[in-house]
Image (cartoon, rainbow, N blue to C red; front, side, top):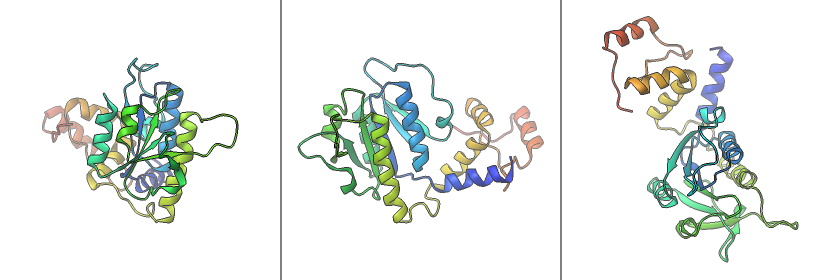
Length: 232
């Protein structure tokens, strides 16, 4: 790991926003899921929540690449996904055309926030719309009535980023210390992190350069089955 790479990982992690997330309400096209994950990474969202489409996903596997930096948590229903966000004190902003919808720039994204985006063609489900605290929209000046889900999410999340930048919310780490430590290890050693998960092992400690503190001793402890355990 070069010093530049180490600095980039730490800088990126320090800007993560644990109280900002995205919920996809049955979005199923792989290119849209991949674009949404890239956007979340760009604005500092550490975790995206996806609701499984009724007809299943149109692809298998994961969007390896950007999903290395953004965790994905899948849910069986939008009720489950929204309930989880609300349990963390988040307001639910649904991108949804309705009589009560307001301009996306008129809501406060500096409070704990979850942006709810609907599926291609159908938008946010009736269930999702009913659960939302606010309905927001992007004013349209042309002939088309809506934008692609990934484009719309990008526009709204950049507004959230701008509000949080002005509020100084990117200036210091806001992650839970244990999550910070775990994420830094997973970013630095993704294959070793997978191994630890499969074997039920605690991550080995890292030094200030993001190298294993004592790699030979840890590998020997693994062979001896004396390495610290962890329930993942």
